[in-house]
Image (cartoon, rainbow, N blue to C red; front, side, top):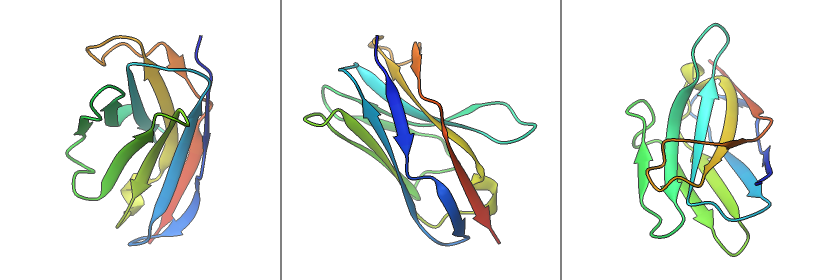
Length: 117
């Protein structure tokens, strides 16, 4: 069982930056950030492996967002730069024990990000 706690959400103007944090109670093979806007389906934003720090990003955030992790602190970060109003959503951190990084069994409560134009 891995417990996840997100923090760092808030309101920011378009073009600004925000950094989200996800503190985990234990180790997981892969951690991801997901988001869900009102009336829309949840979408994957970025994932990172614990073993080699390899990453994957959704096309919509490539070049703007950076996922990173501190294994010593069991914390994963999402640096959000040049944010856009369409980045407004509830952001969730999720952990996977699956090496394919596709089945996320553990989820945080989410942190709200609101981008104003």
